[in-house]
Length: 280
Image (cartoon, rainbow, N blue to C red):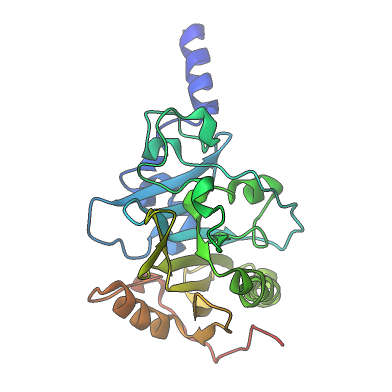
């Protein structure tokens, strides 16, 4: 019995079950408002990842293995921290190899790059590795490190990434810290991209046409009292501010689907008056 308990503890500490999962609402639903993920697209190329580093799940990513970019990453915002950045990019071993649940370095995996982007894909491409779940909104230093997985990144115009999109991430964190956290609302954010017509590195990795993000602050009754979204072309321009409904309508057109929900209707969105979050 003692040996069995010891083995069980080692299993749990190593990260437990596989983190490329069949239903991430069940395995890491804590990162979705009311436990319900945004719309899932039709096709075998889409994989659900509970983003795990050192046995801890930090956020969730819906990944497109054909275009080798994420569709979206979902995460909770709990407070504004000053986390240190790193340039050590990791991959998701289970997309290509029969490996453990933790994100890992490329060199630790025998088969790699068949169903995901690699660091070399971005070299001399003219594009940044654009975070979806960003460092600036990470809840801890470990979470900040976990955002440096290539399954959480897509080719982003450098001026857009380091300019208007960075400003948006910063100002969202500041606004949510003022509007939602003092009221003890639970803050959920989803950030995604839409595929474009171009690719980098021998047609391996799709260059998104747009980057988008949305937030929802739930009260204790799971009603969304503060919400909104932004979408911008993957170029050096100011992202447009939208209501969640307006954003979902535009995303349905860009993904070429009948409808697209960022936050499921059960959140009972109470759309606020527009607030300017990007300051100039």
